[in-house]
Length: 398
Image (cartoon, rainbow, N blue to C red):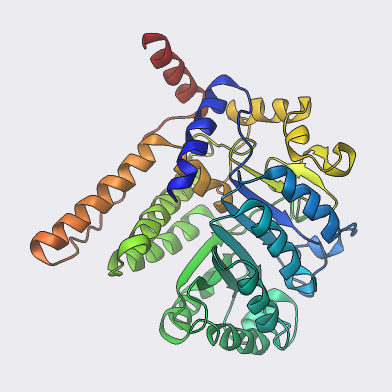
């Protein structure tokens, strides 16, 4: 994790100077729009396919070097691509990421465990996180996901993946739930099933968002703020009750703050902390279009037209314009992937996490307990423009 500190400093400088001084440390690679689910919250499977080849990924990853620390290989359903392990191997060889994250719907129960084992073998020095999607229990999951028998297949996939854990110490197996208008009233059932029956390494939740990428704008899939806030409160209570240690304690501290940010974003309808999409995080669409994020899904350039040189696309006039728009607060969202990078580059959040983790560790050393607290974390109210002004003023004083 320490290796990202120089990139964090460069990202902060890029934000202040309105100039890309570094390539993103957090990259989402949408490997295909193909999907064997028909979810009520996503229409990505209806989009046309023009997928990058493994040779095109090789050139792209070579141009990135070791700037990216966190890769997410998403879709569609990423495990539909037989060459997924080859993509991961290319990213690992060229970029040496610390984290590789892959979501899956679990439908291909006879294929996914073996394919993921090859992924684990391809990236032995990375922390590989596989998150199985679960949007209901039993037939409710099948109803939301639009595929009969999905739940049973997903459970077989989960069992197959869990069997890998004894052989691969770099493997984290999680459950991921998208909370929408179709399952929010069932969330307590999902939560109980996950925590008591599945017992994954991590249980994460995101709110269903209307995204250009997923062709869901105007579909009304997002649950009301007050209902989702109640869900978040239960998740935060679970985190407070966990006796986490070491890296897990740090991860949980960040997750607590992410949930606080989500609640405030839904209420205040603005960026709660500065968004670093277009600086620290980005996404590559299946056809090579580069986006600052998947919410706006506006291309800043296509890698095929720039000889697969990511840096060339990253410095286009369109990329600069989108960075200006994001910094000005012309958009806001609770997108999890970008939010974690935003927190890493936000000094008040980092300081707050360090203080909390340090206090808990010290209390355990002195008293032998966790010193649990049920208070909501108070995030500073600093929007993008205010933070830029404050940073510029500090620079002038120095």
